[in-house]
Amino acid sequence: MSNMKQALLVFSVTLTAVMGLPKPFPSGGSASNSPAIAPQFPYNPLNYVRTKTDERVDGERGAYTFDIETENGISMSEAGQSDDSAESIVKAGSYSFTLPDGNLFELKYVADKNGFQPESSYLPVPVAFPHPIPQFVLDQIEKAAREDAEAARANA
Picture (cartoon, rainbow, N blue to C red):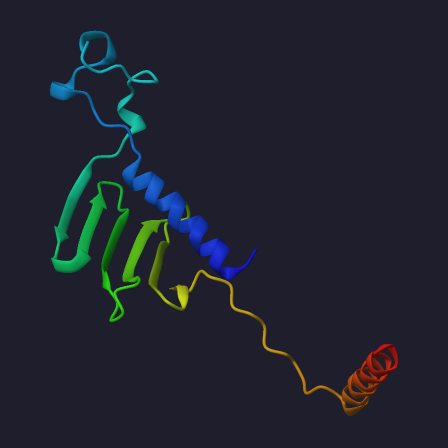
């Protein structure tokens, strides 16, 4: 799986966890005594995490910021605005959460005309090519290119 796909997967799972959590019933009620709310699953206080911070600011010409933090340590912030051409939005942000082993997962990103560019110590890093390409390999690549060019001229 590519770095971008992994980052998008982690981002969507985190966003789902932060934004898609069920809301508690008003006044500490339950499904049985709250006729105005019809949950799709039984009420259980372990099914949700309270939001500690949810700050959103909309600026001029599409600019925005938001900061969200939950009781269980998930946090996400993002800021965005139109680029100079006003054809796209440039975003920068971060999110973090505690992994099951107790370590903190942190990811920072920029999304602009060059795509989604995540940075995290948890993302895989491509392995550097371990050695220079030997000359006989370069010679073989050159020979194959000459043969392809000759075949193309013969078929033209």
